[in-house]
Image (cartoon, rainbow, N blue to C red):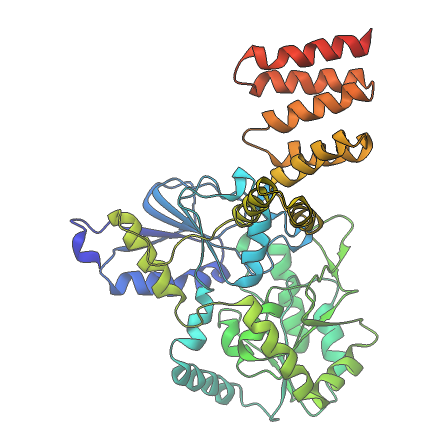
Length: 462
């Protein structure tokens, strides 16, 4: 595909720690295999011909830019409103890893902050390529790690927190060390910017290295995927690895009273994942034992959730580079962008409009009510049903619907603003009517459109 390009521009992959580098590495390998010059940088302000980013809340400085998630649990405390705080609108392409993130994006796609220039694409999670692109090779590497560690038992419990603090690792070891299982301690490869976290990790690793013959401190630079390849259960606080564990059919356990030190005072772990077993420090041992003793029950749950979290297993990097090359050539993209849910809902609304025009008001109204009940961000159903309620004298309900219509009509709210102004006037709410009228004047195509509302506002006031 790249032969049509006269010049293969350099691709710069930006990372802030080795977790991000590991996430981007499969894409870099794929691009390099096609002849692209590859560079790595820790400074996202550096200019790049093509820039690939995955750090938190970054802005591109590139001729062409692509953004991926930092991790699968990124800003899970505000789901699905992620893009309000970490916008993607400055990028050319955005990549999400599977259906769960597709759903989150589709609910937010009405907002400009969530929409890169060419769109958002469901192209999988590149880190999964390490497991699925060559599964036999992955198994060999995992077995090599097993032999290197000299694991004592057949079964293993993996500890991999988001943050190491308040002696979490020691809680884990003390709760489980007398069980006939291997305890694998795997910390993330934090950058030196977080020296205090690294100090906590150093302290815990020193405490547990050699503390028992079934406790193993694993090199932080080893990919978490190989560690998951050895695990039967994974224990964490709120780490995104709880989601990545699904890739290896490993059930996850989250200790919800372990605290997270990214606030002052530290906050409890936030675990909005229904595919993770929640427990407490006091019940950690019993919970892990239950998971170990009921593997089939948890495997069934893991299988179902894996499909919801990940797409294109083993194919992610190839699909991403395919789309990148096509975009650079100005060719149709092999994988088209996701359609925002608001556009899907608007097609449904247009069908309801057609039914109304044909005289079937009952079915038309029901379709629009269904859109509203599911929380659609398409403004037209709120506007149409709001104006219908105005005609029936139900002003309070009409006001509520029309206010939502204005909220969702981000780009051109003139129509619902006009209807809302009228409702405020009918309710003698002069102050609100005037405020809405000011907004309407900013969006109305000409001043004449505002004159009837000005007259009504004056009548309301006097």
